[in-house]
Amino acid sequence: MKKILILVLILNFACSNDDITEIQNNGTGGISCLVNGQVLKPKTNSVFGPSTQYFKIYDDQGITYINVGFYNKNSNSEWKIVDIYIPNIEYRDSITNQINSLVGTYNLKENNGTNSYGTYDINVLDNFPTYTTTENHNGELKIDYHDIDNFIVSGTFWFNAVDENGEIVEIREGRFDKEINN
Image (cartoon, rainbow, N blue to C red):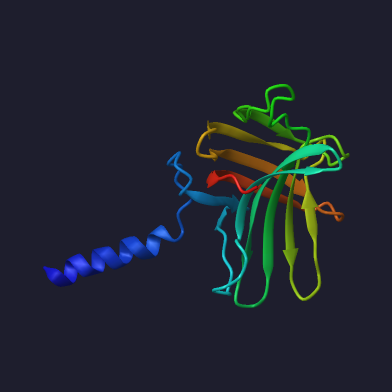
């Protein structure tokens, strides 16, 4: 009986590594998605490396952005990076300076300086194909939950992205449950 219980626990733990992020609305769920049907999660082969996942709000030349994403580095030094940028966010009320809710749906389109957009990058031996959303290959990021007091957000995303050769990557079932990094 003990052997069966141990086997079930091992199989359950092994399978859970291939699961998509579960949204808990508490900032602990992390981030993940499917890339062309395969689960992709944050990962690095360095114990002391920088955070591999993020939900940031920052200002750049007077524009407030949301940047949500993660990177995955395998043992072959191959990097896979999922990034979403949402510009022109009204994060703080200009009069009261109070934080505004981020709950809403943000359409991902072509990166023209004013649109929200998504990218998927792969870096293998200095070859760095970049896939990006366009007007024809688009998607969305949806923030379903924003705990203003505890700086926690959660939601979903998906997008289609294309590289310079016309190859399309499908990002599906993206989920995040993160603390906001400022």
